[in-house]
Image 1 (tube, chains in turn purple, orange):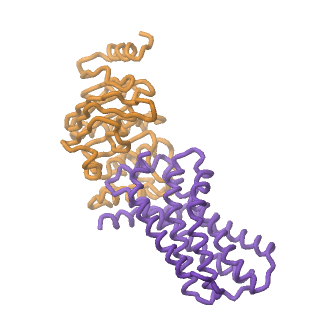
Image 2 (cartoon, rainbow over the protein chains, first blue to last red):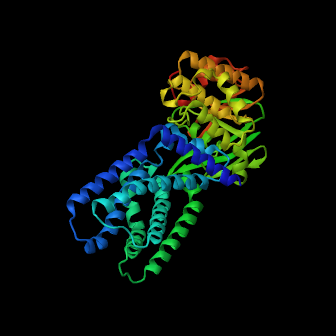
Image 3 (cartoon, rainbow over the protein chains, first blue to last red):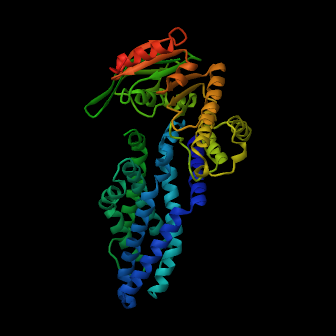
Length: 224
Length: 234
């Protein structure tokens, strides 16, 4: 119970901090909207072809918006050495990781909620045929991305070239997530995709592995 | 009681601490001096459990920090030249956050009292980024004391403070000394550091080179010892 209370307090701090500064969310939303507009001008396909391309466009946009979010994720802790302040507290340090991951996930869900309907409007695409599956893959894919990304953001925040290092470490690691998410998203659009179930399972397994591993390693990571 | 036995810290191939043996009795005020790179901050970080020792042992109230870290952290408050405060949060929100992390009972009253003690009652709703350096350091003192820790570790807390803020810090330190808090202070300032301490030590090259009771040693004599040890001009 203490762990959950600590995560809640950390999350409260994250939300208050974001509400006061409004730096991360506004940057991510503006960036995503710009990408939507650019893709809107650059790609002109008929509906059938668009169904095959749109999942990739959505996930590329979310990947880069997510990298923006992750790069700023530990900025507040770097200012005034706040990470030391957290490390001094009597808590299981993995609570810091859990709270950061939840916060990053919340921000991404808001960005997706604003941006994804615009994709369908701008590309004049009717939307997913299986809305439930689309929402599941969106949440699951975003969670997997943020679970591994938050850990790497903590790792790279301790280095001088963190903003460059983080995407270089992250992108190879999230290739299985992106591939699986794109394929399952295509399936939710009504396209015939072989093995969509398998890719969904890959996402679940990836999510579990990259929740447990960072929680086990986070304490060591902070000591480095 | 804080005891370190043969404390060693190695970073890469560099030995920062080469066997530090230290005993701080409950309620004792210990000041640590030393040139840059002597290992003062590293020692303090190990005592605060922010860094793991490469060798040796640290006991706080008889418990090894490697085994009881989470419990022992409740007993420690730390003030550094960095404030550990969140710029976007207000003074009250910062204390509320840290208070929740330490599960402080009757937190609202405790915060109001602390803000009053450090003279920041007028700025409770102001974000920390609007504070002067002195105000931030005063709030940092309140943050370190929010859970009323019996042990206080301080790493050059006077850095960048104006005379008024130094006065507030000195008043709080003297209050802590009277209320039998254990204090470990790192500073370069002989006057501030020797003022209230029961034990003064000089750390050179990762080892304790000299210890004394500053009440029995004149300030000039202590200064001479210091300069001799670091190889400076007498």
